[in-house]
Length: 365
Image (cartoon, rainbow, N blue to C red):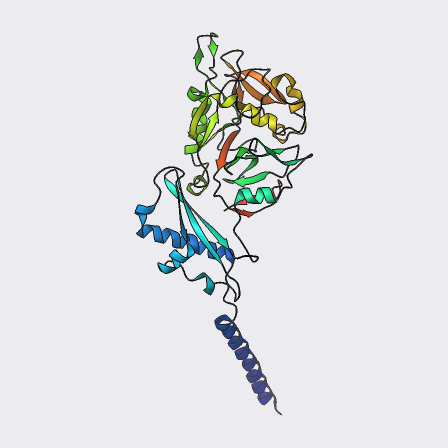
């Protein structure tokens, strides 16, 4: 056989094999597995719900925090969603819905998909509880005041949000989640600010420890309306009441009843009250200002490189506010410290990934 014929036959053989491979791939695409990822289905459910409510906008909730639910069957019947049975493998049965929540000027669309043992969407608060054996000792999540709080020196309670790290402080009884900023500096956040700089006639000095009229409230309000949070970030946050009541050095009740005698309602950003700082410590001697050094023990909130303001005023003078700097101090309101702020995630927020460590923080969808 001459070389020309050999190359011809070799070319025909290679071409035939390539053609067979292409045919096999096409057949597999057409007749093979029809499933797509569950996260893709969730995304399609959200898109379908948005399209559905464009046509039915009068049904959307109008009050802050209001919710409405549309199920998969409705979205499929309306033509906005392909039948889920056509997107999963044979034998897999799924149901689910999309919850629409009024948040600020917009709406948060959250898809919940349940495919039995194969997959189910998990709310963030559910993941936190499932991921933490409820503790009796040591770092972790503890039942307290009708909800759950993180205690200890190094609990796995980091969450990355708005491209920054936060520490999850507690899960509230309604399953919303309070988190506190956990990076010592940001180009978008003032390193040190006064709690208040107004003239106080009672003490003939600068600083009044009334949060509702304070300088730091204005600082936080400006941060909230800045570009620190994206529009998508804001849909995950809900308003919450700030407990701003004053506290004496000897008060040792830490269920919020002291601070919550006075509230500033429906705030999207705030500071941490005294009792939440105390409740993060595992030291049983930590209960009040008078034993505040004990509160520095086994307390992740104390692991912060800057001094920072608490939300709580002192009762001893009208210009004094509690501050964390190694331990809890009474400081004049016109002193400067970090505005280590808090936010609250809605109970509808969904877990995406992460284990809660500093290097692998929780991520929410």
